[in-house]
Length: 126
Image (cartoon, rainbow, N blue to C red; front, top):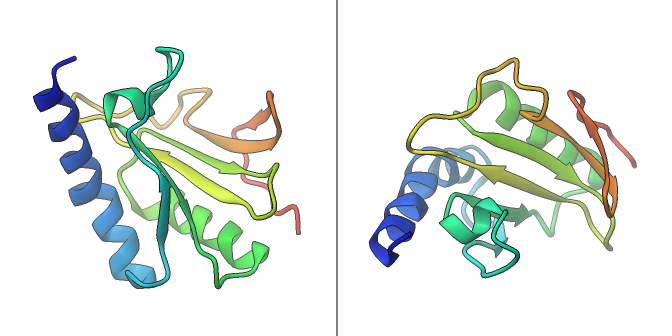
């Protein structure tokens, strides 16, 4: 991918996902903890298509509810409510070329711990 491709993907994420979440929950509430990053070559982060977001002032249950809002209201490619650190975070991606179909087996899910995913459900681990 070119740098221009990555920038366009990040812009697509910001316009379609980031702005919608920030409008609903407030820009000061949402913290992007990981956007573009270099890694193994398989992550949507490396293509500028994914960001991890946290809400430092929200409870775990509120973050779970935010992930449900995203699932039901925002055009995303993949959504993962991730547990495994001090606070849960939400991985959400957007693909300008076309998001996964609603019936895709890995469209949304919950990361319980490293390498342990439950697809097709968002779980409140609070």
